Length: 167
Ligand SMILES: [Fe+2]
Ligand SMILES: [Fe+2]
View 1 (cartoon, helix red, strand yellow):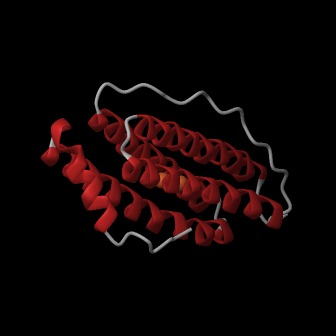
View 2: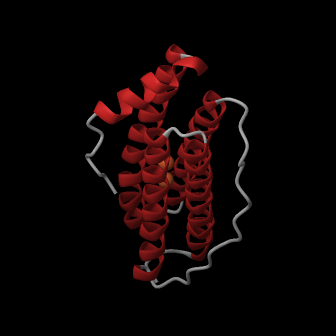
C-alpha cells in the first residue's frame, strides 16, 4: 500500500467534504434558478460539477494507493437564503473551510513523510487558491450591485470568460 491507513481515512473524509460542497452548490444553483437568475444558477451548477470531480480525484487516488474507498454520509445542504449575497457568503466560507481541510491533509502527509500524497495534494492547494479567489470576486460583484442590481450580476457572468473548465 502506497499510503498509510491514517491518510486513507483522512482522504475518505475529504471525499465527504467535496461531495458536501458539491451538494451545497447544487442547492444554491437551484435557489438561483427559482429566483430566475439563470447565470448565477449556471455558475453554481458548474461549481457543483467541479466539486464532484474533486471527490472523484480523491477516490481514484485511494484506489491507486491500494486503499478502500468509504464515502461518508453527506449532511443536507442549506436550501433557503434571505438574500443572494448570503448564498455567496456561505460559498466563500465553504471554500475557506475546504482550503483548511486540504492544508490539514498536506500537514498530515508531510508529518508521515508520504511524498506521493504530498505531491498529489499540490494540485488541490493550487485549485483552492483559484476557488477562493473566484468566489471572493463574485461576492464583491454581488455586494457592489446590491440586491436590486442582480441583473447586472447576471450580465457580468454572461460576459465573463470563465470557461477555462479546470477539473
Ligand atoms: Fe473542491
Ligand atoms: Fe471548491
